[in-house]
Amino acid sequence: MTTQPLITDPLVQLKDNLKQVIYGKEECIDVLIIALIAGGSVLIDDVPGVGKTTLAKSLAKSLDAKFRRIQFTPDLLPADILGSSIYNPVQGDFKFDPGPIFCHILLADEINRASPRTQSALLEAMNESQATIEGKCYPLEQPFMVMATQNPVEYHGTYPLPEAQMDRFLVQIDVGYPAMDVEIDILKSHKRAHPITTISSVMSVDQIRSIQQAVKEVHMDESLFEYIVEIVHATRHDNRIQLGISPRGSLMLSRAAQASAHYRNRDFVTPDDVQWLIPYVLPHRILLTSRVRYDGTGKRDVIQDIVSHIKVPV
Image (tube, rainbow, N blue to C red; front, side, top):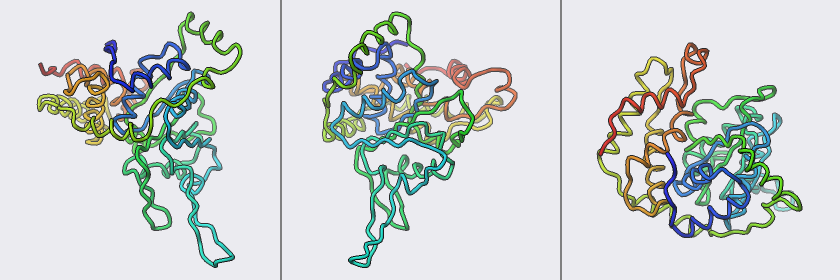
């Protein structure tokens, strides 16, 4: 399904900004912006060199917000993300030194290279927008968004993300290789300097907060709630699926659909909003059985088959 024309300003300015850096990936940009205004986090999963990190950095530079980048490595510790207390010998007390998680946009680059213990430092922040450190709870500034990247084909020295963490990402994006003509344009655009150096911020933190509040007011008909729940329940009773979608998944699909409607300058959600987002919001939340995985069937294929057998509300 193709995206509809976007006329909401200043989001159209944000999209235009990102298109100056990321060529030929309009749908990825749409999904990324929808995740931002829905208040969710994004997992960008693809092979090296297709622009995962560039996409994340371009969004951060387009926003007048606090941005931090963490390069995940096996020796990274939770305190390197959350922060820790430092002893002050002059005053004889401890002072908390906030870690990079205290920002608006956090880029977790190659997140699957860190140990599970370090990955878990993000769980509370992604789900509750707070961090508990040394027994004290610290609220995170809003908006807060984690943008994580990972390489799905290189497993040496990596730690696969557990299902509990995958479930906390609103969407998963696969960037993919560019078409030939697009790749030629990429080469031309990098001839003198990286395009990311030419863009500047087009949205403020206050604007993002305001849009996120407006998203919550978008109307969603009862029939669409039932449609989402029917899809989710079907994943829990399908013999191809070992672990079905949790209630968090249905909540996130609902909120993403509201964000999609607002993005397209509507104050109501349509079935098209839900269906367009399903391939991005649901597949990474399921766990297929071993037999299905060995058959070469993908998660998106299973989800799409389930959706095709459920009546769409009109």
